[in-house]
Length: 437
Image (cartoon, rainbow, N blue to C red):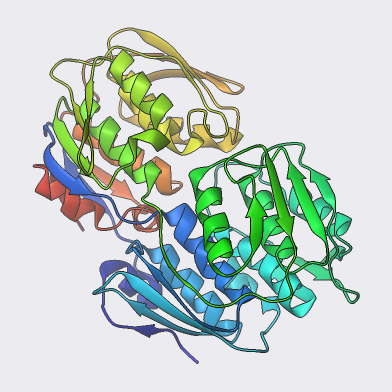
């Protein structure tokens, strides 16, 4: 069985033919106009995985038109689902069978980290799951210990064999009190989905508070789950005997919203971000105001305007509601062309600083020491060939190219397509000279 697709796109051609596209970006553009933000990548993929909990057809709307949605659709298809991705209406219909497959192979899982989110639903539904160790972005070590420890406390037997996480719960899962050493988003989500069908009550202490976790929890509640404490450090799940299919609209993407906000500030532009949620970006927007931008709330989102060279700002990434690690490349790029010096501290993923090596090729003055980056701003970067190493690094390099003095070629642009719908087209609509080659 194959995924049914109703619309072709550049990234689907990449999936079929392995095309590695480049982006050609001409520097000097001042981005002005309006963009509309679609559903969040970090939410949509988890919602798709969670449909496995309820036999029948679930519908997810406000779906982002990104490559990772296609990867997840294919993964669910291999587990026995019928998946209909409707690009014309930005929605997906997922028909989940009574009996699921329980093995997620490496050839699919290696393409995106979010594939690990099938682990919780599969162990809950089938009492057995075999999921290949995931791949995705090269941004540092992201072990699965928190996932495994949580499921083990719920009665699962978990082992690692031949590159697979194998979880079994022949007697079923049982509620437990689980304390996470770090508020891991993925672990919180896997434990929460597994607990929905467990016997008894599960309490997750030091749970992740990200809006994407809240969105997933609300999706599960609409399926009949009993969950309280979403958005707090303690989430309580009372297990139920079954869940039913539902329809749910994906939360707006705060990272894409934040990317556009930084793009406006960097290029001394003026961008209105429709469907953006400023309440989900309080700290990043505060930092942009500190840098000299004017941020105003609109009826359907918010607006960021900058009419001068940015002022350097210090930032430390932290779990929500702290500064998002996914926006770290954007704030480093802003500081690279800002007035003054700054320190950016990465507290979540040490591999994020791989991005700095590419910025150095563009003439940025950055020194990395452990999980700190010291940045001395210069007025303009210098165009050069660079390569994207992950989704957010790719987007950051595009913004860096926009404030460079010539034509920049960005290799491995497929990374950007995994997280940003129609990124070149949206940039063109704002006045940028960006094209695929």
